[in-house]
Amino acid sequence: MKGSTYRRCSCRDPKTGKELGTSCPKRNSKNHCTYSIRQELPPRADGSRRSFARGGYDSRKAAQADLDHVRALLGLAESDDPEGTELISAMLAEVSSEKTPLPDVEETRRRLNASQDLVGSLTVSEWLDRWLAGKRIRKSGVSRYETDVRVHLKPHIGDRRLDRLRVSHLSEMFTAITDANAEILEQNAQRRAAVEELTAVPWKGVENRARRKAMKTAIDAMPPFRRVTGPSTRQHVKATLRAALNEAIGQQIITFNPAAHVEIDPVRKPKALVWTDERVARWQQTGEKPSPVMVWTPEQTGAFLDFVAADRLYAMWHLIAFRGLRRGEACGQPWSETNLDRHSLTVAGQLVQDGWDVEASEPKTDSGFRVVALDDDTVAVLERHRKQQAADRAEWGPAWVDTGLVFTQEDGSWLHPGKVTDLFERLVAASGLPPIRLHDLRHGAATLMLAAGIDVKIVSDTLGHSDTRITRDIYQSVLPHVGKSSAEATAKLVPLQRKAEAEKAARKAAKAAQKAKAQAKAKKNKVRKKPKK
Image (cartoon, rainbow, N blue to C red; front, side):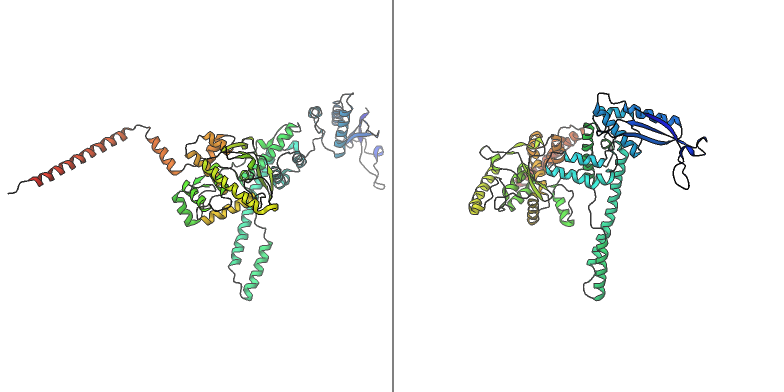
């Protein structure tokens, strides 16, 4: 196809404003004109012409190099490949109109063979929207991804080209999030101080009322209380981006995933601690929990279950405390998967909270599908619960909502997981026991099983973990008496010379004491038998 390089003068007639072109008196002067190129492109589908044009080259050599570059790109498509020819022509027309640099020939060849976008102008924001639209997971999972994308990823890196995203860009994003956290904490502290100052101002008096009004106006002008983006959330943002970019690599849109290489602060998961007497005393004095994750002792668990024995959902608290079901699993457990005759139940579903909405869902992982064995006492508790539910069904009559679930509201409808948590917290507070979360009952169940000597593999399967390491790392809070027993058993395995000498000295001392006692007794008896004068 036709193509050429040519000189061009941009001087204009001061009167008419038109370009002088070849009539410019300085045209023949060295370095006065610039060079331009024009390359005809295959016509559009409707037959209209199009071309690649670019100017401003300092030399004919530079102009010719770009013209050769354009022709090399056109030559990537075979003569019998009209689709490839159209893609490259459209790409060159777009590059020409937007005045962007010519793409690399080999990279364009790779993209063409991989059926990728040739221009590579897809932004991170556009790709994230496309990726989210293709997700086929439960609604709550998609909502979490959407939050990461909307709140963090799009504002910081959404405008960047997907193929030019680098590790440094992500480092800058997480640095900006950390800086924003510091600002949020400062603003929260200022607002909290202003609110506390307001509560100290009396209501009576003209001056006090005027002062309160001014302070309220100032507080309203402050930013509202906000939550910071913690380490766990930052890790989730990184994981969301990494998953989205992996999908882009799978579709051969990009070849490198910067999210897999950016370094951010690790998440330190809190260790589960047992409510020992010392910790309870400290909590009673200060009201502070030693750890976000606390576990009751067997005695405390028993005290709570005794306290809530008359509660309508006692069977749920009992099942979670002894068998470690998750909140959503307990709320979504159907009678059809609960076989009391065989002392087992099958976890095959759950109720998931998305915002405040609730939806039924399958377990999150394959390990979540599991059979849980039931002890005799738990079976008896569930049988009593079933009888009570049958009585409730008869009382409600036609108004009864037949969900088929083990644990329901009074009318048989779904339990809201969030309301179940609120109820549990109120019951714990009323019991006077040290506070734990509802999920901590699950921690306690795992701890009790491990303390009872149950194999960690069985405990892991009962809890629905994919790996026994999760059970060991998170749930193995050693109860005090178990720790003491293991310590004594361990100490007895090691023979120490000082221990042998101490035992020998103890035996010698005991023997001497016994001998002295015997001598004293003999002397006493001798005195008693002494004849009278």
